[in-house]
Image 1 (cartoon, rainbow over the protein chains, first blue to last red):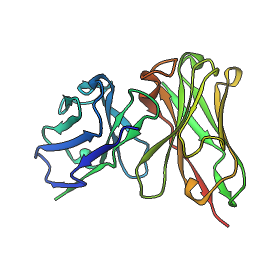
Image 2 (spheres, each protein chain N blue to C red; image 1 turned 30 degrees about the vertical axis):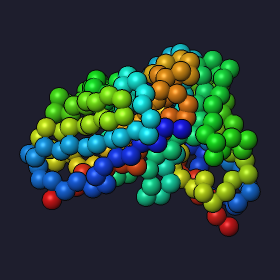
Image 3 (cartoon, helix red, strand yellow; image 1 turned 90 degrees about the vertical axis):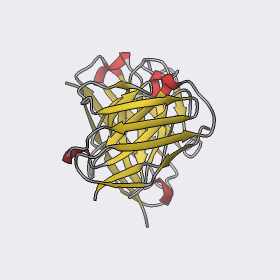
Length: 108
Length: 124
């Protein structure tokens, strides 16, 4: 099973600032199979990024993903008020798909 | 518009059973694999099970294998999760999630649409 470790656990930032979230895998896999999800309180997760760097339908271009091998990054270029949420990375290369523990982006 | 609506959650005693349903609309149901993903209160996401578009193949997390069974009914555009021998650690919100592909290779486990979830509480 691939273990995904996200850091930091919590990121305290102000609107307009840049957010950089990290996801590290316990073993290498194809970057084609790395996704990022956003979850707000009381809501289901929403797909943001797939294939490490492709934005899902309707996702603003302030969200970008990068990385390969075992190290991946989600960047939010300028935080909007609606971006404060929990973000999860996930590999979907094979069964079982696994999620990272999440990074909470909170208002400073 | 893709819509997924879960139902069937509730309070059940340890050792009991429950069947969850996920009614799907807005897409060709049999063309896509479907999944169950759960989230314990205040915790992260855990994949539970997947079922191929045809229903002929199923996959399970180690934590539920032998206790949970996924199935789907093409005529009703509905997926099910039969949960037996429930434990306290199965307490969670259960989400159904649509996969991007039909077969369970990689894309089966990429979740592009999610339901709002149904809460399962296992407690005496």
